[in-house]
Amino acid sequence: MGRIKRISGPLVIAEDVRGVSVYELIEVGEQRLVGEVIGVQGDDAVIQVYEDTTGLRVGEPVYPTGNPLVAELGPGLIGSIFDGIQRPLPEIGLLTGIMLSKGVKEPPLPRNKKWAFKPLVKQGDEVSEGDFIGVVEETKRVKHYIMVPPGVKGKVNYIAPEGDYTIIDTIATIGNTDLKMLQKWPVRKPRPYLEKHDVSEPLIT
Image (cartoon, rainbow, N blue to C red):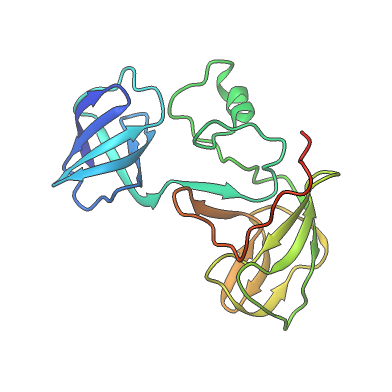
């Protein structure tokens, strides 16, 4: 844990944060505002804070997380409203009112909502990253395919039967890796792909 050394608008200099790395997620101040390390100078870190820093004071603690800033991917994205750091604005509004409070933490995707999952593979199949293992009809127009995440491949040791599941339920086991409909991905790391396709039909919203 380090301390705030200097504040200049959304930029904060923190001291005594040995070991942090650029693009690491870091929580700033007593309210644990969301920030990202954008520079390291010895044991000092330059932090971009993504929330209002009004009221933040020199000497308040900062909390390195050791993790990058990530986006949550899974059923529940369509129809949701997020700010720039994927905070779900309607859900936070229910907690704090029309004026959003600083430091409020709420999962981007609902953990309790159940989705109708249909498996597309069977036990014993061999799969690798990018393969479809199931599908969820997220809306009447959008089918959400559940893919094997990057870096995972092997035999399907378990696949959930067709039914309703939350995004944090285990819906498959590939080798020794349990898969859920929820995946987290670093926002600054490009997703891998085999090839790009030209747009043939617009998505009408």
